[in-house]
Length: 132
Image 1: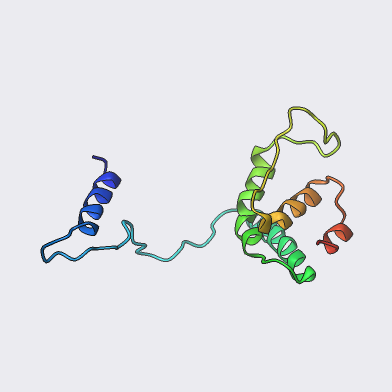
Image 2: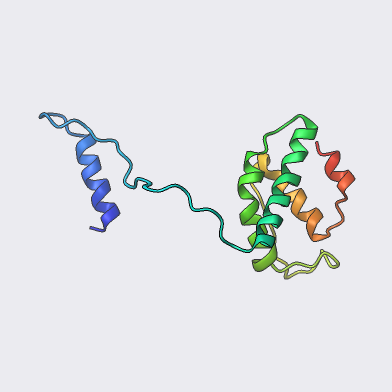
């Protein structure tokens, strides 16, 4: 058994123990022992992520609808994808070989609109202000 399979196996034995004096243990397999490390990447990258966060968080706040949690939490992932991974061309949005950025979480749609605006896809700041 792998370590995680062993943990689950022994965990399940404890949960389904119907007799004896052993009580079930429901502790998580991994415990954080030190606080989150501070960001140590380039300052410009952190500024980009924070700008995405603030732009995406302002939209539901201004619309008085929605919650900024998902857009703020997903901003680092979006920055990485749009700046280093995805192939796209705002000047040719119908390019057949472009990558698509699809979010199934409706709460994060302000992140998608923010990224389209920042990438130059024709969404204006006024469009973002009129979100909803």
